[in-house]
Image (cartoon, rainbow, N blue to C red; front, side):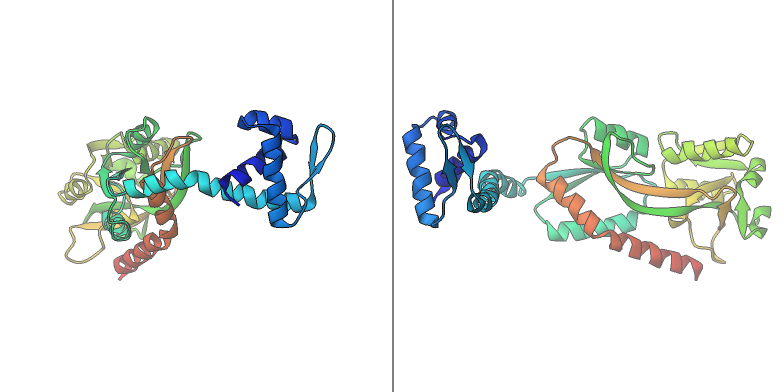
Length: 308
């Protein structure tokens, strides 16, 4: 039995005719008939019931059809899979990562991926979620991490969620509250991420919903600059808890959970729906799905450290 046996059998089964199969395969009807007869003798079963102009597949033929279909699929994809595997030596995955993610957690995840696939190069593009979305949409990068629920143009999977907190200079009157209702921020200057971050829009939208326009005094894409600005007394910031410094005597800032409303910050991995993905990109997606526990474990440890 060889590849041609399977190919000819599949064609006859699909066309339900020796003559049609022969025309499609550009061989004589007698040749394909002999090939099927030889296959039946080798297997010791009857694969087709021959009628005047058509053939009908038998029960053993149906079983053989299911196995032959899988064998052909594997054989026909063998060449491309080999090529993709060898190309991994030069393959690169381009990932969009917003600065608002927890850098050391993703660094650990990427480090684990690199140890598993040392032949794949990783290029990181650090932008806000809006830029990352458009870059994935335009095919500039393979996959992206964004901080909002993906729209219908993307394939995606959920990574994590985090509660939002208020970071303020130590000594602010708000420090007396264990939790800070958002409406209390109406009287304080606000430091925000730039408008190319979805979090920027989410915060302004929630402020508007509860009846005030915040006094935005500074916008940046850098977490450290934002925290230093808060520490200097310029204003307060609203950040996911994983990005907030721990409360300690030495710290110049204080972190409190924000309420009314309680905002939740989400992270999703996205890639363009219908777009061909390189083998490296597909490996990263599957690897990340399998290692989501690593992200959650790191977040849990961080939360415990902040509480202590």
